[in-house]
Picture 1 (tube, helix red, strand yellow):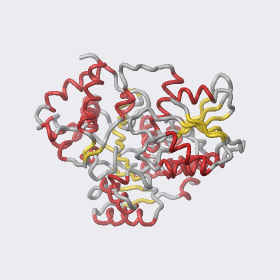
Picture 2 (cartoon, rainbow, N blue to C red; picture 1 turned 90 degrees about the vertical axis):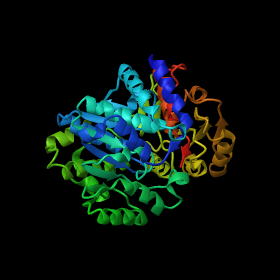
Picture 3 (cartoon, helix red, strand yellow; picture 1 turned 120 degrees about the horizontal axis):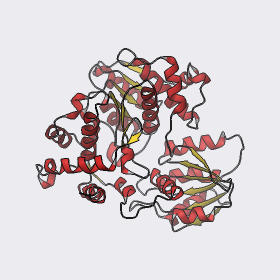
Picture 4 (tube, one colour; picture 1 turned 30 degrees about the vertical axis):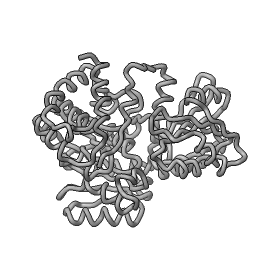
Length: 427
């Protein structure tokens, strides 16, 4: 099997959608030898900030000398971003080997219960981390938590970053229902940490923790000024990242008995972290500043808007915006459009993209004074804004990934690796 063939096999798993439930994953894990039972995990759920918090935890424990697996989604450019050890992407050879190992296991499922892409890649990641003898795995949920494929593990700690509106069609229409799904990662007697602020969501988490006799640690804005954060310049921009960092610090300290980390290592780990696509500033050879942020829901858009308002320059950016149709594209555009001097709308390279003409109408309604231009592709939008001093690209991590691929000139139409992010849910 070639790497192209392995990627095509994973791509074809889209046919089976994204089913919520653990039965398939448990059976597949058993067929694979239950690799998760040989590993230690920190399980991270939440609406926003999951990936950044995972990156912070990974950096701290790697700096402490541990061999740390990292499982996150979606990827920005290459599939291997989802499965890393000490920030080294899984190799193409390992991906091919794991896909070939999974194929005979998948034949043991009836066609109407065939494992999904995410279920398969979750078990691939577990087999890889177990084979490489990781000391710790930072384990990000995909969708929700309670019925997410990652929820077959019993972690050292459960982390819930926050609860906002997103994926309502699968997690429910209220913060209470969404919080219930996130709180599903809480396990009997396992400490849980959260930076959730919404009272109704926090109440759900508190009740679940109490029911499971799980010690609950709350993290608030006040913790962002406590040592070591009061004197650290985080590589990731935005006040919200300081809250994510406070959550990571609290997690490390809660697990100090099992995974000791001294203060110097904690500071060093937080100071060295890298996580692309989240308020990532790129200065192009022309001097243009390009800010990339994957804000794809109302909470993310509010966070980006706050960061732009807090900018030292006070400069109004040019906005390149692309959003998926199943997101609250009207709400996101209402938050971001008023901040822009000009707006360029680009389709996300996805069958789920929102229509640019509808986005245009929404942006014009909230910022009628700004020129609002529809582009055929994000590459065209980048070309048309090449003379602008400050450009913000946002609305979807898929869009950000497309821009990073464009800037790095790594486009490979054969592999279609970014297309692996595509899915549709079957509950």
